[in-house]
Length: 175
Image (cartoon, rainbow, N blue to C red; front, side, top):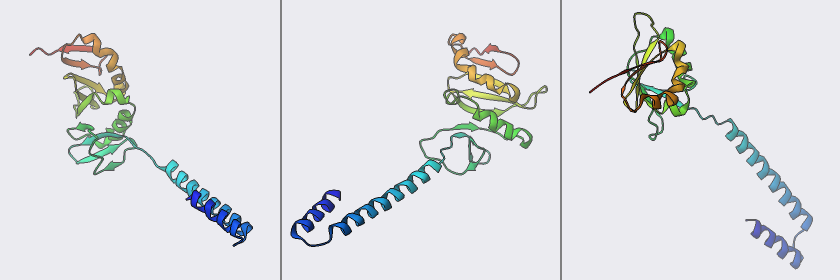
């Protein structure tokens, strides 16, 4: 479009038709309007928020985003962790917060989560890992899950239950 505009100015100047100062002023005004439109678009893009999906609540059929917002749908290429049972309201917001603190690389290794309270701790969860292991963790020690990538190689290919809820211990499950 710029080429055509410049060509039109040249033709008008050569032929003596038109006032060049009016054309140049109109060109400057057009540039300024376009610049303002681009700035508006840039402002809108900078306000665009990208939120990560933390998990899918199977019981409610809702996806939970990192800020706790629940939505009905997400892009089809997203395969979130599935929470397979009910989590009490008394610990739910803490659970969402703790899930958001897990490194994405580790979160991608979790396939399912089950709320699994014990007689000692009512905020205990079992994580089903993609590699076939299980991890017990409580809300107070949830950040220990971030050490999974360092712990996994020490298991030497064994499958079992990793207890991060009471220190660090491993119970092998033999087939």
